Length: 139
Image (cartoon, rainbow, N blue to C red; front, side, top):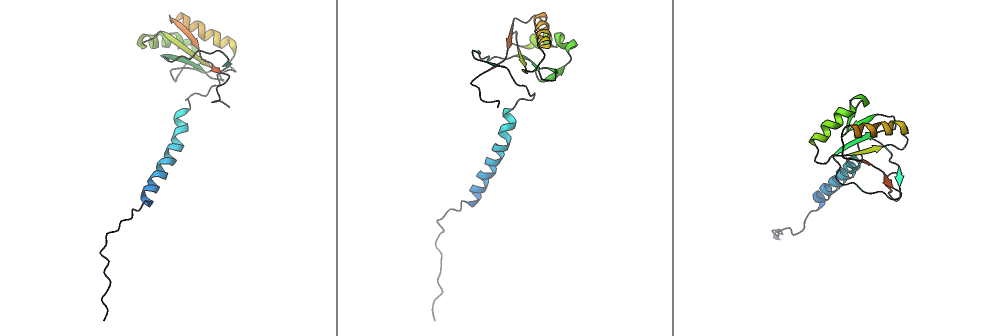
């Protein structure tokens, strides 16, 4: 009679299937969540310039969308309350600079009115955000 074959050898192969599954799930999560992190909460289309200076230290930001709605640091504000809102924002900000981001389709009179309100709120400087002609982020 033959002896049964014994296989007491240690398996030296690594099963990478669970590892591959985890990596693919993480890849899908990052692919889905990255575009959500990159887009601003308020959709505006900035006007283009050739010689735009970049502003790194944004403290108080006023955004005017194409419908004419005004936002101060992502919170919607009525134009009547904008002066007091900017004053309170400037009191807590390290820099007394106000950045205005306005959609290129906004009525010019509204943009000038907001600039006048910013100056009335005792801001030291006013920055108008634009994007350079070479910026390809908005197609």
